[in-house]
Image (tube, rainbow, N blue to C red; front, side):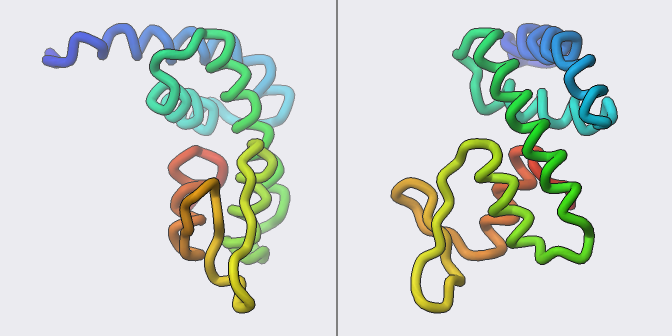
Length: 126
């Protein structure tokens, strides 16, 4: 048994999101595995938000995941990450002449870090 007293609440929040997202994700053609991954990410990223706010964020991430998947496997993963993050409402801007750094808010990220951010949010697959 887990020592984390929040674990049952988090599992319940994820199950609630899964029920609410079932039709939306199915309409987009996304499977349960992808939906659960995104629901888990939203629950972890937004622990003190309302259920409705989390569902809206999960829907945004599901739509971004669909857009990223439609870019195709031959597309550069950095471009897929940028498109997915932008579709999720995250402002991403290239920095410098080489455009090998990316700004999100006040932070700078490399190409690899940007791809990892998109993956960690469930916006694109590995």
